[in-house]
Length: 114
Image 1 (cartoon, one colour):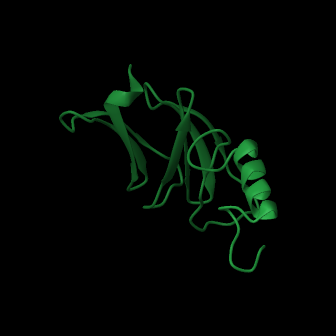
Image 2 (image 1 turned 90 degrees about the vertical axis):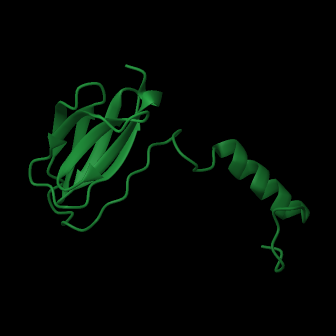
Image 3 (image 1 turned 180 degrees about the vertical axis):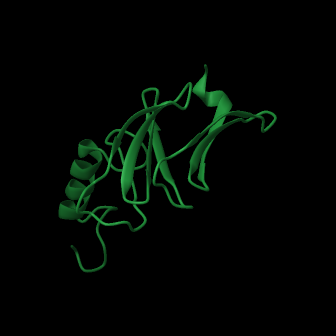
């Protein structure tokens, strides 16, 4: 399975994999205890989904739930997910470059110098 050929949707208590070229549903998995809104991210053949105060890990190829954590004590609000090394968060090198530019008054500095 080439994951670049698919789009993954978190919606209506489920995670669904669709083919990008024709929109065909490849698999759909209902998440136990999930609410309407499902937050998603993925890495290394896994999809991480948060909804209804629970965190789920699914196999990207099949949609099979690998594990669920009830996150006891954290409540049931909408969650956001981020994995290090994935997405647009700055790397340590990027932070160091921003700090260096700020300290030297370069492109990263704001008008106050901070």
